[in-house]
Length: 301
Image 1 (cartoon, one colour):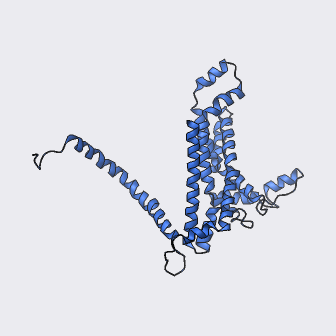
Image 2 (image 1 turned 30 degrees about the vertical axis):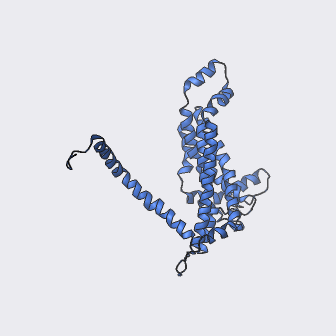
Image 3 (image 1 turned 120 degrees about the vertical axis):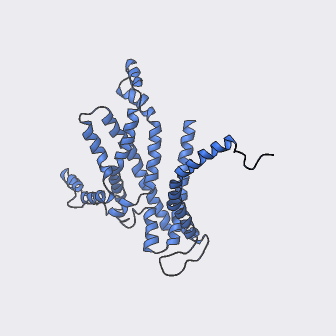
């Protein structure tokens, strides 16, 4: 029989030595994850099952009533439709324009640092500054865009008060503000393409357009997928610029689902119902992400 004071086995000792420092290094992250992610998620899920509000009455458990009401809420589905429409309006330009900007800089334009600064600088601005600047640009009588339209003999546009135009105006603002991040990703990907591919194509007599279609774009396919997925997820969560520029108007025609959650929870005081809407939207975002991931995996295979 082995002695109770026998030395531990070498394998168990090495595993213990590896496990203890790993836990110590991971502990700060795990604490922050639990405090700022897991606990709020659990608290929000519980709140969605109650009639919690900002009034003085104590919340009571109501089960899935909030979810049932949300699924039949026409305003929620309308706000979700606005969110999807904004995502469709903004995602394609934010990918295509960023690619064009990166290609222009990568070709060796004179004064590259000026172009890089000009393309990326708007991304560094806070949303409040961007919103105020574009509200001025969209002014009906004094705004730059309507003055340019008058100069070429075209009629003025009610950028922020016309329901058919307001969402496009916000998408244009978002394009100017955030395209710089995608531009940097594309530029880094372009710089990682091996030069020998272009040298071999040039020896074979391939022109600039052939090299673009046969080498550059295929080499950028992976980063394009990544940028597209990130952009879709970011656009689905739109709130700041919409709230600051139009406050969801005119006639709630630009109100996204995140702003509807804000209105229901902090204007209508129905925190439980707002939480249920948030989890429905969260589930839809997860489904969209899973579908994009599955499409990516099929493409790789």
